[in-house]
Image 1 (tube, rainbow, N blue to C red):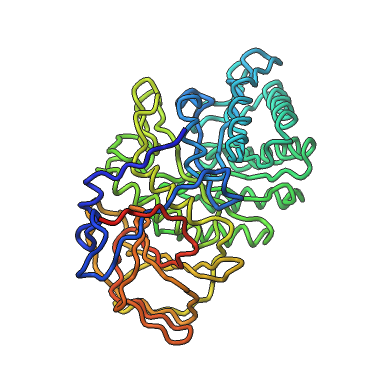
Image 2: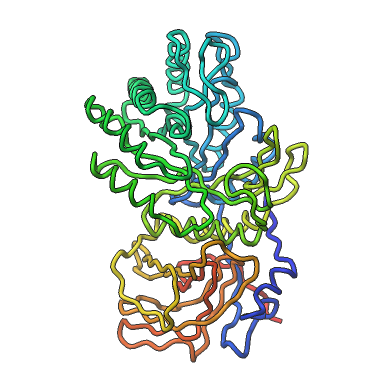
Length: 472
C-alpha cells in the first residue's frame, strides 16, 4: 500500500511567514524550493535509531490488521509490542500464539524488527498480577510458575525472530524495589536460558524517569552478582518540555556507575494531538501541529544524545475510558484508520534522513549570530564525510503558530558540497541563494537562515532523497 502524502493549503500558509512554499521561489529570501523529502520504506533502510510504539494490542486497544499497511511506509526500523500473557494463555497451560505470530512475522516481512515487552499478569492464576498499567506482579507460587512457563514458551517460539526483551512496564509506580529486583533477575535468567545472546531491557521506567528507583533496584541486582543479565535500562519520557533531560542525565550517570556497558534507552514517548483528560501530557490544548513539533524535538534530542528512541505510538488507542490521541494514525470509532495525521508524515521525514549512515560529531565549533536558546547537533556521512546539522529554538511546549525569525550560523569545520535548507516539519527542501553562504576553507557562514520552534536542517544535498517540485 502506498501512503499518499497530503500537503494541504494550510501547510503552505504556515510557511509563508518566511517562505512562499506554494511557489518555487521566494525572491526576498533568496531561497528556491527544490522539492520535499521522499519517504523511504523500512525495507530500504538497513538500520536506524528509531522504533515506533505498537503497544496495547494484547488488550485490544489497537488492532494490527487495521493499521499494518502503514507500518513499513513509515520507515521506522523497530516496533515495540507487548506479548500479552493474559491473551496468550486463557486456559492454564494452553498457549494461543496465533495473533502474535501474525504480528511478528508480518513486521519482519515489512523490514521492521519487533522487540517485545514481557509484562502484565494473568487473572487465571490466583494472585497472578495485574493485567493493565500499574498492575501488580504475579506473586503466588503457582502464578510465578505460570509466568516462568509462559516466558519460556514465548522466547522459545520467537528466539530466531526477536532478540530484545523488556521486562515489565513502569514498575516504579506501584511495585516495591525488592520485588521487582527479584522478578527482573528471575525473568532475565529464563530468557537467557533459552536465548543466551538476548538483549535484556530492564524497567521501562515511567515518564518521570525515577532514577532513584533504578538505583535501588540495580544495587540489589549488583549485590547478587547479576548485573550481567542487564544490557539496557529503558525509560519513558512524556514531558511537556521536550528539552528537559535532567532526570535522563541522572539516570545515565547512575547506570554507568554500576556498569558502563549498560546503555539507557527511551522506549515510550509521545504527545497527544487533542486535549485529553487522562493519560500523560493531559489537559492541554494540543493540536496535530504542536504535537508534530514536539515529536521532532523529542526524537532529535534523543538522537543528539546518542539515545535509542521510540515514538508512542503508531495508532490511536481505544482505552475503556477514552481514545488515547497519541497515535500518529487517527482512529475511527471502530478502530479502523481514518487517516494519517501530520505527525505520521513528519516522522517519515525523520526516517528518510536519519539512518545508520549518519554519525554524530560530538565536538563541532559553531556560533549563532543571536543569543537564542537553541539546540544544535551535527552529523556526517560515514563514507563521504558530507555533513548535516539540525537546530531549533527551545521554547518548552511547542506552539501551534510558526513564529520564524532568521539567524546567521557559522561552522568552523564544515564539509558541504551543495548545502540546502530543510524544514523537517513540512519536509520542504530549499536551495540557498548566493547571498546566503560565505565559505573560506572549512569555515561556512550561513546567512539569514530561518529558525523557529521546530527543527530546521542545513544538509549537503547528497544526504537527502528528494521528490522534485515541478517548476511553475
